[in-house]
Length: 479
Ligand code: AMP
Ligand code: ZN
Image 1 (cartoon, rainbow, N blue to C red):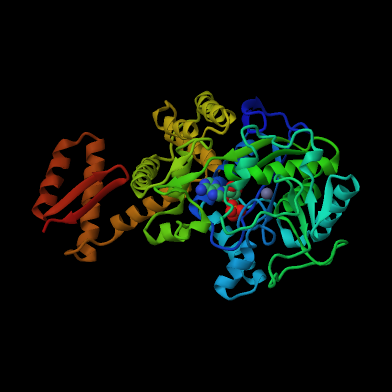
Image 2 (image 1 turned 135 degrees about the vertical axis):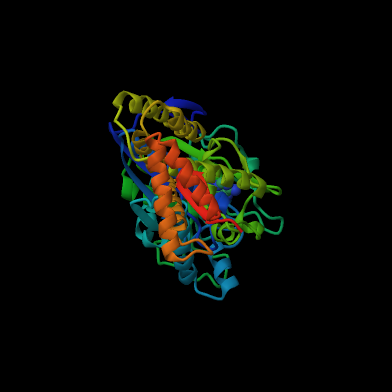
């Protein structure tokens, strides 16, 4: 498999630390509000990476944190804790809103076909591990205490800006003018490992530590959770591109300083979902959620398909017009699947050729738009309908667009419509008409045109309009 690695800024052959096994870590949501569809783009594409790896035969273990403490308004450790802000907004406790928005996040994920990682860990459950990590960093002199807080000393590293095209100026991103620069830091790029001098009087979440009562910085939680649950060597770390700096840069600094060796080999970053105003973000306020899409009548899986139509490394612009186009494409796709019969011989070579193309698209840096093309190729293939259905089912286990279920539902609805007694006839008349139509079909099959024509005339005399659809025959009484 080829994966683009933000660390080296090129596509590389993916070779996990242990053959056949993949340790994967994902930065989870900050649970102070609903996830917006931009956040969910990242989780959909990360889900595609995990499912592609599994389909290609890897044994994947994946962990995700839930950020319920320490993420300040700016990623550069300034501003207020986002969780406290959320709790105040809703007049609830931090733990109440954390629980509420964690549940809401996984409900959204389920609707979007996103598999829940086997390991999901709230940051507040690993405080001891974070404290231990900070102790080791202090012992190794990678950290210092100033003004009551513990900071990571970035000057101790041979290279801090590991993702290339970023520098100290990028730290200003997201820092509001009203926020004061932290004068305790030796260097602008240093970051907080542990806050003991809370910036806020009402800091609700605090724990005892060797440096006094306080709380962990945001970055340490991902290093701590990853090392605790996935061990010292991580294969893939995922997140939205905004997390590359400073969050992931800081994760690398502290994890490698703590472990004393390289930590994560591949960095998988999903580019942003933008709307007319630019990057969709929670702090902007009126953002789009899955519930809002549902209220507007969209199936969340149509949004998943919208995301799969583009490559994860390209920014994606959202508009309802584009989503409508995807909704039409999704509906047509389901209709085509619903029209496939469950019959026919199995052609292994034909199926394997389809499978190869699908696999190749996933192996090529999770190229989901090519994977969708490979799905459409199934309709053109010279294999039986039964094989086509089997291949679509197999591919959709990775794509997770709910295609087979949607096609079954459509067929059930059509069948119900067909078997319902049309307006203007009694049950006996409907049974007679159904019998006549069945007889006409038999006659046509037997090329008995005389009988077929006679029945056609009889149906016409009864004002019956017969419609042939790919799913079968339906009829009604002419008005
Ligand atoms: P947060 O809940 O803010 O911690 O973010 C959760 C995930 O969503 C992180 O991986 C972010 O990098 C990602 N993210 C934030 N905004 C966007 C966006 N507009 N498009 C795609 N991913 C995003
Ligand atoms: Zn993280």
